Amino acid sequence: MEPVLPPLQRFLLFSGVLILVGAVAWRSFVGPWQPPPLRPAMRRVEIRVARTGFWVSLLLICVWGIRLQVQVMEFRDPFAPLRDDVLFLLRETFWGTVWLAQGGLLMALAAGFHHLTRRARAKELRERPWVAAEWDPKAGVGPGETLPKGWKGVWVGVILLVLTLSLSSHAMSVPLVAPLAVAMDAAHTLAAGAWMGTLSLIIGLQARRHEPPHVLAGQLKAFSYLAWAAVPLLLVMGVMLSGFHLGELRNLWASDYGRVLSLKIFTAVGVMLMGFRNWRYGLPAVNEERGARSVRRWAAAEVALAACVLLVTAILVGMPMPEGVH
Ligand code: HEM
Image 1: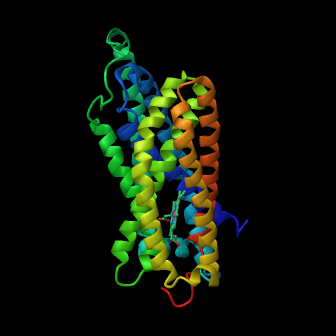
Image 2: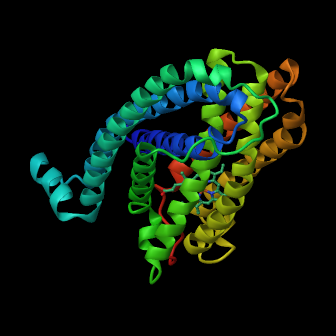
Image 3: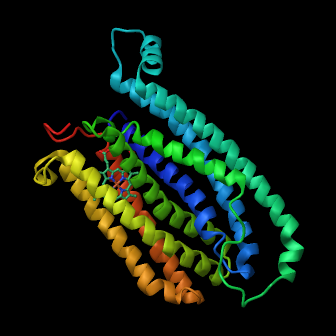
């Protein structure tokens, strides 16, 4: 169990955090950017997105508990009582402070998403009669309403949560420019969530309800703009972080860390190629039932491959840096 638990815990943590980023990104950049005829359907999806955010936050609270156990396992002094080790970790180390903040944030996020689920459900009930009366298929695409305060609050919580990951990552040990490396690591994770977290929500929540194809089409179209902004940011930050952590190019194949990073880059390029294929050939056909089915299958495969990238990342962040780097 000992070698498996730390990467497994990190994999669950990364997956959950990316889904939470996806939830706020969906509510800001996908849900509101639909033509009015799709807005009632979007409200229903919003309820499911907020509810997923709630359950994922709860799940992450369990993962957060396991995280302390993993840390204690790694730093355990067999000659000291367990209680002393735990208290030392929580009171005297920066890791402990970040861990405590992470727990507080997760609890606040669970409460926030629960509140947003109830708000969205109430809004959906209130809007039912008049939205149907305002059906206008010629109306253009544009933001339906400004982002409600509750969602803005959850955005802040999610960004801080991402920051807690970066504050306990390898970025902290980059000499001289640690704050810059931490900011870049956080931007990398936010971009990964805006891309893969949002797509997994669109596909996962859609598949269960069998909405008509234009509901999926509208979401994927808005998502494609988001992906075109997120992927370059993810790449630039990823390459710069790789530079910090590798020191020199030959470490990419000459060190264990570099070889695992190469595997990650190789798999991530596969995800990007699948995403490009879906955008180029899937999106134009998504309005028809057959096209929508194919896009759903390809996008699900894309998300599955991205989960492999996360698994490799979960191993990578637990490895020592190449010798002499930092
Ligand atoms: C599907 C694409 C990708 C996803 C979902 C992804 C996700 C992540 C996540 C969640 C982290 C952990 C952040 C943390 O612990 O704070 C991370 C770290 C990192 N990623 Fe990515 N990433 C992707 C693509 C890439 C690419 C293409 C590169 C390089 C060109 C890259 C390089 C890195 C590096 C160097 C780190 C830091 C690892 C460490 O702390 O040792 N990533 N990534």
